Length: 108
Image 1 (cartoon, one colour):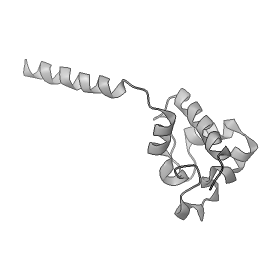
Image 2 (image 1 turned 90 degrees about the vertical axis):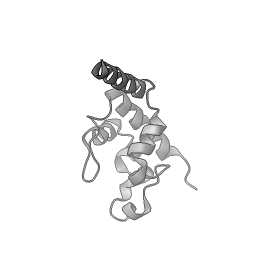
Image 3 (image 1 turned 30 degrees about the vertical axis):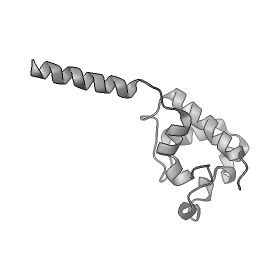
């Protein structure tokens, strides 16, 4: 009886964690902002080695190459991890849109 209760509680916890889909800004803050900055401006320390951390300076973003940005998010590159196993294809597409949105924002 006790094992059954523990299993039911574990299932309830898993279902509650999966309930609400993550928003794109939440995913960005959790997965990307540490290196790419809160607004896509790039982490100041990382910019010296990787100036393209600033989305507005990234060639693929400036060209509007959605396929290249999507591939970079899915497969990773250099120090950037691949997210194809952590994000659904729809979430990756939303992250591509968000990347372009941040690149178009006016920087202070």
